Image (cartoon, rainbow, N blue to C red; front, side, top):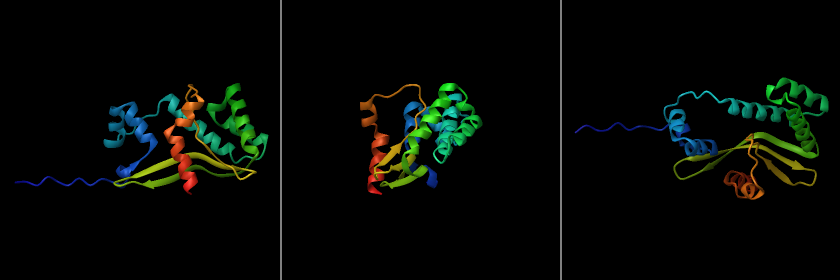
Length: 165
């Protein structure tokens, strides 16, 4: 009788995230290609735009002047339309009254029984009164309702992580 080989999981295989779970729920075949077969998936135009917006927002979060924001909007092709430039300016103004941006793309790990859940929080910042805020950037054209936001499992988990730390 031949023994079956033991297949060892890599550390990466033990890590779960909302991105992985969303990918699996959206399209099991694409999940299999990307996470099981380890095929490089070419980002769609919408995904590329979302990645660019995230990168631009990270830079804007640490700017000190309207001129710096203007330079960033020129640098990123995703911020070339009038509405997009205005959104970048509003984002900068929104953050300007915040006391401290802790870190963009904050990574936290939650140990589960047989794996790790990794959270990627876009922004965590504090205002002048000590209130802590979580910002998770979404680039979908569909705006969720207030109740959808309040019930969102991703945001609720991120809030719990911040409260525990």
